[in-house]
Amino acid sequence: MQEKAEIMLEGVTVTPALWNGNGGEPILKGVSFSVRSGEWVTLIGGNGSGKSTMMKVLAGMLTKGISGMIARQNAREASSGIIPLVLQQPDAGIIGATPWEDIVSLLERNGAEASTIIAKAEEALRSVGLEERMRQPVETLSGGQKQLTAIAGCMAVNASILLLDEVTSMLDPIMSREVLNGVRALHRDGSAVVWVTQKLEELRSGDRVVIMHDGEIRFDGKASELFRRDSRGEANSSIAERYGLEPPYAVRTAWELQREGILLEPLPLTIEELAEAVLNDEG
Ligand SMILES: Nc1ncnc2c1ncn2[C@@H]1O[C@H](COP(=O)(O)OP(=O)(O)OP(=O)(O)O)[C@@H](O)[C@H]1O
Image (cartoon, rainbow, N blue to C red; front, side, top):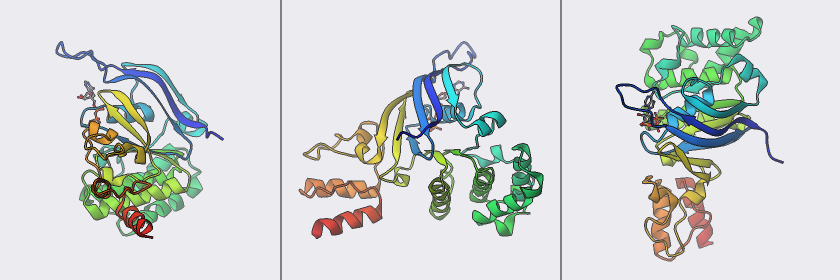
C-alpha cells in the first residue's frame, strides 16, 4: 500500500524578486515532488542547482515569488507551521543561549505539555550525546555540537519529517558519521527525512535519490540505479557520471571489477556492501 505523502509539490516554480535589473529567471522550474511518511530521500545536485531553495519550499519558509501547489498532510506540523529545517550553518536555527534553553524554547513554541518539556528536552540532548554540554553557551560549542543541538530539536518535537541541508559539510569524518547515524536512527523510528548532501558516500542502497539540475528534478529513483553502467561497463554511461557526480569508493571499485568481467549485484555503495558482494561472488 502506498504511504500517504507528508509533503507534496505540484508544478512549483520559484522566481526571486528582480534586483539591479537582473533576475526574473526561475530558480525552481515547475517541480513536482512528494515525500511519503517514513521515507528517506537523499537530494543531490551541483552548486546552484536549487537544492536549498527546494528545502525552503518544503519547510514552508518561502512565501514570495512562488507558484504551484503545495500540500502538507500532517495536521499537527502544518498547523504549528514548524517543520524543522537544519541548515549547513546551524547558528541560523539556534535561538537559545545554551542547548538546553534552545530545546526548551522550541518545545514551548511547539505547544508541548508544560510538565513534560524539561524531561523531553534533556532526553533529546542526551540522545545526541550532549548531556555534558546542555548548559554550555552556544557560541562556545563546536560546529558539530551546534549541528547536534539542532538535530536534538528535531528529535524533541518528534517531527514526522526532518529536512537537513548539507548538515555534515563542515564536520570532520567522525562527527559527520555520528550526525548521519543519529538521523538514520530517527528515520528507523519512523520519521521521513530529506537529506541534502554533496557527499555521495553518505548514500545507502535503499535510499531514494533525487538529482536536481538547473532548478529541475532530473532523476528520482534508487541509489543503485544512479551508478549502473551499461553492460560493457563503459565510462560515463551511468546517470551519476552524466551529472558530474563523484561516486563513492565502493562504486569505483565495483566499476573496476566490472571492467575485469566481475559484475557485482547488487551494486555496492558502501565498503561494508562491497566486502559482502565480493565474498558472495567468491562463494
Ligand atoms: N533570493 C534569491 N535571489 C536570487 N537568486 C537566488 C536567490 N536564492 C537563490 N538564488 C539562486 O538560485 C540558484 C539556486 O540556489 P540554491 O541555494 O537553491 O542552490 P543549491 O543547489 O542549494 O546550491 P549549493 O549547493 O551551492 O548550496 C542559485 O543560482 C542562487 O544564486
